[in-house]
Each structure stands twice: as structure tokens, then as C-alpha cells.
Image (cartoon, rainbow, N blue to C red; front, side, top):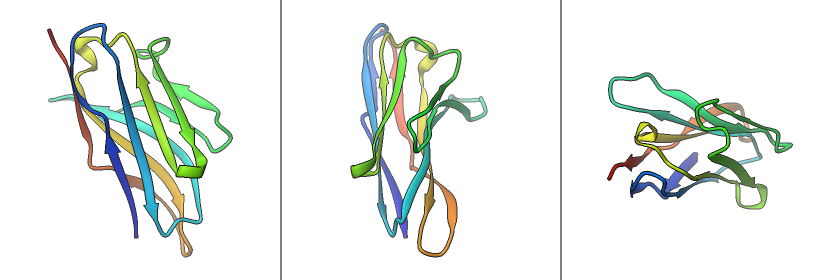
Length: 119
């Protein structure tokens, strides 16, 4: 069984920063691409950032220059550093990872962590 556990969400004022973490654990042979998605109330889930196993990154236009995605392969962990947060960044943030286990490769999702940006 594979689990993704997120941490680091919270309430922050506009212009502030937060760092999200997501650690994968369980029966893992290899962690492939990892990423972060978010879903605001009434909206569809949208891509925020992804990072491949070779550390190539892709960020949504709305967060470029403010957010950074990185990973620690030794810890099977992905991070999202969020700077200069705006009220429109308020959402539940979900971690996603494509993981190869002994019998198959599939996508996994974390439980979500709330990020609220408000004065």
C-alpha cells in the first residue's frame, strides 16, 4: 500500500509565504513524476506545478515567479514553496505522484491541505 501525506497548509496574510510538503511511503519501487494541484470552492481541480524524476519542472502561469516546486528523492518527498501569496491562491492543495510499486504503476493522491490567504 502507498500513501501520500501532506503538511504545511494554513492561514496566511496576502504577501506571505507557506511551504507545503508531501511524503510518499509504503511499497515503493520508484517515485516518478510528482506534483501539486489545487481546488477552490466551486472550481475544478487545477494544476499548480509538477516535477519529473529528472527534476524538470512545469508551473501554471498564475504561479510562475512566486511558487517553486522541488523534490528530495531520498525521502520520496515533494515540496511547494509559495511566496507572495494572493487571496486567489486560497484552495485545498493536493499532492499527486506517479508511483511504481512491485506490481504496477499508478497515480496516487494525498488527502489535501487547506491554504487560506486573507487579511
